[in-house]
Amino acid sequence: MKKQMTIIFIILTIIFLTSCGSNEVNRITGDVANINQGNNSTDTGAEEQDIPAGIESLSQPDYKGYTFTHSGTIIAIDSDFAPILKALGEPRAYFEAESCAFEGLDKIYTYFGFEIDTYPQGDRDFVSAIVLKDDTVATNEGLRIGSSRAEMEAAYGTPRINDNGQLIYDKDGMRLCFIIDGETVISIEYQTTVLDL
Amino acid sequence: MKNDNRVNYIRIIATILIIVSTLYLLTRLMMPKYDIGVIEGALVAEYYDEVKGHDLIFIGDCEVYDNFSPAVLWQDYGINSYIRGSAQQLIWQSYYLLEDTLYHEKPPVVIFNVLALMYNEPQREAYNRMSLEGMRWTPAKIRAINASMMESEHFLDYVFPLLRYHSRWKELSSADFTRMFKKDKVSHNGFFINIGVKPAINVPEGRILANYNFGAKAMEYLDKMTALCLENGIELILVKAPSLYPYWYDEWEEQVKVYAKANGLKYINFLELIDETGLDFMTDTYNAGLHLNLTGAEKITHYLGEFLLNNTSLADRRGEADLATRWEEKLLLYNREIERLSAGLDVE
Image (cartoon, rainbow over all chains, first blue to last red; front, side):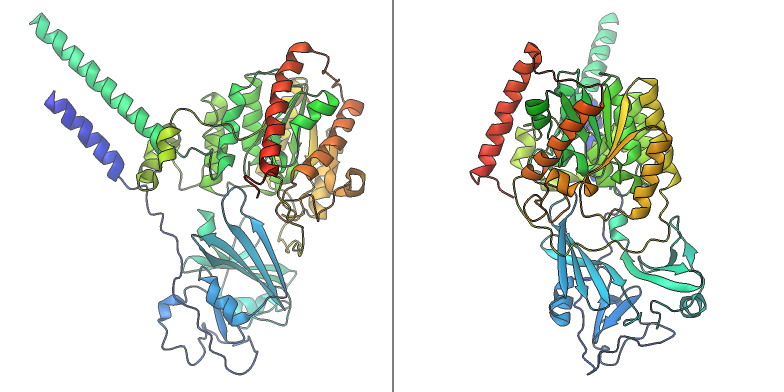
C-alpha cells in the first residue's frame, strides 16, 4: 500500500509543479522619461529608433519595441501609463470601457493627433495601443499619415501582412501596424501583443 | 494464492479510486467558480438546469446577455425565452451552442447577435474558457473546442482542467472551498441584470480597418447556423444590439443586410431604432454605451416582444398554467434581485 500511496503522491506533485508554460506578460515596468526638449516636435526622423539626448541615464531596455515620442515624452507599448499621463497632461477626450467580463477598465485617451489605449493589470494601467490619427504627429522614424509606402519600407524594411491586410513590423514583443490605401499610409498603430494571449 | 490475488485486485481498485477521487476533488477546487467576480463564465452552464421547451433562444456575446430581458418577454408578451450568451462568444461557439441546445430542445425561433462576425479568429483563452467550460460534454463541445483553441491551448487542458488550473492554488479563497459543488445562479434565464448608469460620452469613432469584409470562417459559421436552423424548422433572426462600442461599421451593416436578404432572414439593427425604442444613452447604459442597463434592456425587449408576436409564429403562452407557475417564481426572483440592487447593495 505504501508503494501505491507513493505513486499517488508523485502524480499529484507532478501535476502541481508542472508549469503551464510561461504566463509572464511582456510588460515594461520602468518609468517613462519626460525629457522636455523645449519643442513639441514628435518627428525625430531617424533611420534607427532615435532616443533623444538626455535619456542615457535611463536603462535602455525599458524602451522595447518601436516607441512614439510626443513633446519629449517617450511612449512605449506595455509601459506603465501613469507617468505618461502625468507627462502628457489632460487628454482632449477620455473614454473608458469595461473589459468584456473582466474587472477593470480599458481606457482611451485622445490627444491632438493621437490616441493612447490602456489595459488594466492589478491597480495599474499599461499602454496597449498608440494610434496616430492625423499628419500632425509622426513615428520616431518619421512616418506619418499620408507618407508613402516607399517611405515606410525605407524606414522599416519589408513588412509582413496579417490576415486582415495590415502591414506589420514586429519588434520586441510589440507590433507596429500600417494600413496602406494605394501607395499612401492611412493608418499607423502601435499595438501590444500581451492581449493576444 | 487466490486470497493474495484478491487482495491485490482490491488494492489496485482502491488505488485507482483514490487517485480519481483526489483528482476530481482537486479539479472542482481549482477551477474558477465564476459566481463571484467574473460571473460571465457561469452563464453557459446555467442553461442545463432549466426546464426546456423555450420558444426562443438567444445566442451571442455580451450584447445578448446584457441587452435582452427574458423576464420582460414573458411578463408582457408571454414568450418563454432563454439567453445562451457568454462573454465575447465567437460565432463558431454560438453555432456549437446552438447544436448543443438542439440536444435538449428545438425552439421555434433563434436570435443571433451579429457583432461576433467581426472576429474571424479566436481572441483570448480566457474568453474561450468562459464560453466552453460550461458546456456539457457532447460532440458539439468537442467541435467547439477544436474550432476555438488558440495556438497556445491544448485540447487535453479542456478535458482535464486541472492541467490548466493547478497553479490557482496560490489564489484560492474560502469561496473556492464553499462553492466546489454548489454555486449560486448569476443570471435570470441567461440575462445579467445591471442597474448602474454611466452615460455614453466621448464614445470613440471606429478606427480605420485594412479590410471591412467579415472573415471567411465567420461567414462559414453563419452559413452553418442558417442551414442548421433551416434543417430543424427554426426561424433564425439576426439582430444587432444597440451598443455604441465596439463601433459597428456601415460596411459591416451592409454585409449583414445583404446576407439576411439573400437567405430570407429577418434582421433588426437596434442602432437604427433609437427613437422607436426610446433609448437614451445618457441613462440607459451602465458602461458608457457598451451595454444597456436594466431600463435600456427593458426598452429594447419591449420592441422585440412586439416584433416577435407580430412577425413570427410565436404566440402568447401566458395562459399555460404550468409555464405561468414556473415564470411566477422566476419573476419573483427577478424582481427581488432588482430590489436588492436598487437598495444599493450591489450597484455598479
